[in-house]
Image 1 (tube, helix red, strand yellow):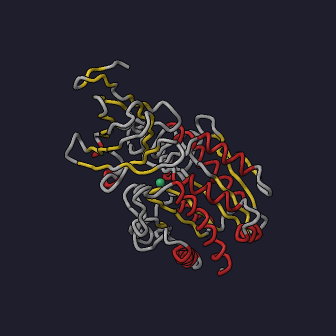
Image 2: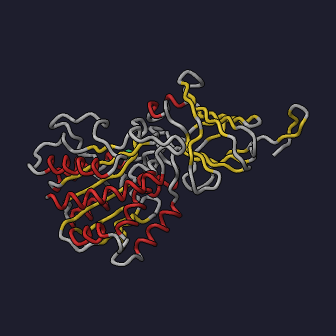
Image 3: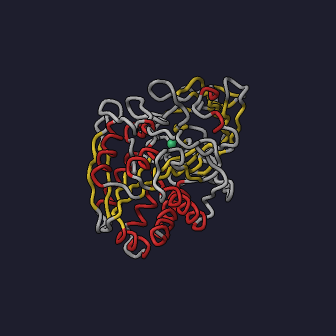
Length: 387
Ligand SMILES: [Zn+2]
């Protein structure tokens, strides 16, 4: 780094890098404490939205970070009203005031932040690293009554880890991070797994009596490590692969679906994040033809129980309903409802905030995602009691 003279004093320009697990940024230009940045798209160039980078050398000075060319990002509607996540201790992530201007430099998110120290990290959402994933898997596998198996292997050679527990005859599948940039989904998993493993929790003990749980905390470890938004190493959007998964394009989905075929599925939840909608919501399988009479009431009952369980969930805002017969069987929730006649659902958490109960300091956060994981199991316990 070269010292430059600025208004008579010697100051260092900042440095920006993303050469780490789930890192994603390209540096266009740096001047003093300002940086002009771009996102690196997923393979195939179709998706970009996730970012995760470090800034070095700005202690006590205000940073102006501009991520440009965002009108071509996957979800331009994700930027207005969004504040970037920032941490200095790598433990707690807060929000840095951010603004979006669609007319500046192809669409620019400007993040302003004055770090206390020389090191700060910025991300689209609190990241969930592959190291933490391995800690989660190892810790859960060692818990009393838990087992671990590898359902298959990713294209880069990573295991598709599945944790199992419970002695009941109903099969519950919980899986997350088909879309790797939706890191809140694995924070949700950490909360859910901790609750299920807690032998002092009566709800967890009752759930484990009633059901056998199969839990895949990260369906897409390659995309997670590579810093992708939506795809695996081959550029496949895994949640469009459930109709015809293949060893070449989507071995992760093929492995999970084959394992589901062996056990059957009574209840499934696919955990995601949504870029644009500032609410927690569920999406169902109402567009599929030939549903059994119990399926839609089962979905509605779970929604109602979860809304009663936590103010961090609501049923007024979400995706528009899919007309009957128009459901896409390449998506997990639709495929599982049709394939197994089960109650399946997609849980969406926000990148922005849950506007029904906003938190201006952290927005939607890793901590709230974990808490929601616990609440979803509480609702499942009530759901089993009512069916
Ligand atoms: Zn998603």
